[in-house]
Image (cartoon, rainbow, N blue to C red; front, side, top):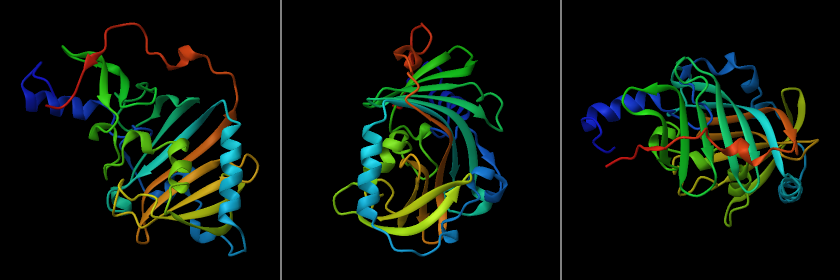
Length: 264
């Protein structure tokens, strides 16, 4: 970070306050099964015949019809997949094509983070408005989309945590997909598609990814990444509302000069 204050001291201060993960933004350590949005495991699926490619084709078609949406996003982030390491957080998410995104932190064990806003308009920059200003530095910052302060604990970047990225990974050349069966998330029927090789060049330790596609909307509503048998990332979407007519100013922070917070 630039020397507005002594480098290490400033970096530590900002790291504590600025969001540690895109949609989690919560740092709440809790047991996996304490979150109702995250209690449906892949192991509960019945083994039935299905066609992963057909499901993905329908999901791609459904995504093509989406102009915008809103929802509640809950993320479980765990570096090693151990329950005691789980971080779980919740945010309100707004999306409008082409990849305009607004993230509002709604729940966090750190009260200073609640109310913070992140704006992403594609590209390589994320704008941040903190709920509480940092002395001498203010409330507004611009970070690289790859900055570790807004990545998961394993370093998965900000722009790899949304619905666009979920479908993008499953559609990558060379990825092997399989239909795992039917299940449910938050009482909604889902179809589970497994991807092998989806996290190549993103997190080489991830051995497979399982995306649950909502049977009604045909859009992903849960995404889970595994290292072996352990979950290291789980994203769940609830209260999804499609094509609500979001205005462009939804994706603009309040007026003011953006500070720049980047690493040396």
